[in-house]
Length: 418
Image (cartoon, rainbow, N blue to C red; front, side, top):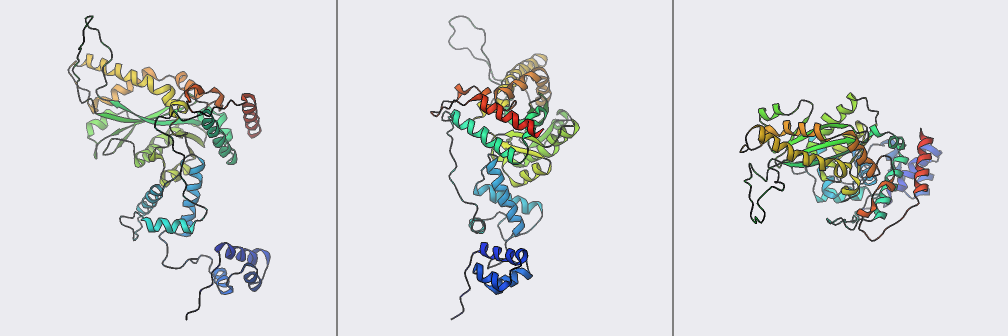
């Protein structure tokens, strides 16, 4: 019978290697102490980069897989728990970007690779994430306060709490849709009229997505308009202001690739041109377009810290929803009406007309005080959950915190850091 391969943990092998290299223990003594094979220990000492597992080489190197593991841990801390599909997609994007071939179909790893990856990284495990219902009525004050404490603890561990003291370094980004044929408002009609109609001019179901980013200092980053084209017609490109971003996707919705382009080509140049101190915090929702490894790596390289708001709480925690989008949407309806008056009441707003109308609406509705009040009402600047109107939280677990304790402790920590 063939000799059975000795079975021992890789943790013991690493401990034995450290004992030989750092503590001066002999190979024989280290092998006996940690119950590992002496020949294996000797091989690893001579070949530190060699594989530690049986079978063919892995598609990603040990170092690359370790980076992925660290990324998963970091994302979880910042409110972006990764799923199996997120990990697989990130590996595909990494392989495609670096033009590396693999045995995977279209470079997309299968369930076998995923299971092997999880075995190689025992510090990771699958968990059932807390599910927040679409109604969002289950969100409680306790949930929101815990989110504030968790995010503050993360920033403290990373020595980043000083950012919370500078409104020019705190941002909120979100996308919203604009109908090319917005719904009509109330109209005047004879008293007693039961059926009053107005002919819709244009396709009432056609919408364009726009990515907006605002700072707690009341400054707005140039937006990005996402068109539902594979290739955008030149006349539409020419209609968009030169400093705005232009994205495209088949659905017209924000995708991970589009958000990547926004960060790289719009948001980061905006930070540099305005001499904003890095790093900065960008609060976003937990949409899947914000979850890929390539995006996380880009943000790390550019010193942009992506932090996810608590799930389904954007009506409470997101300044864009709380303060900015309502006047924007109302302004858009007025802007379309004014455009029709200047052109023809029977004219339909086209994609070529969209950006010029929206630019006028933005200039007429978005004021610094509106944005500042939004961040204050959401507790993001000043960083204080006591500023939030918790009557919006309909969850059962209501907690009344001591406002002075939280505020005083946070203030003293910021003063120490500064």
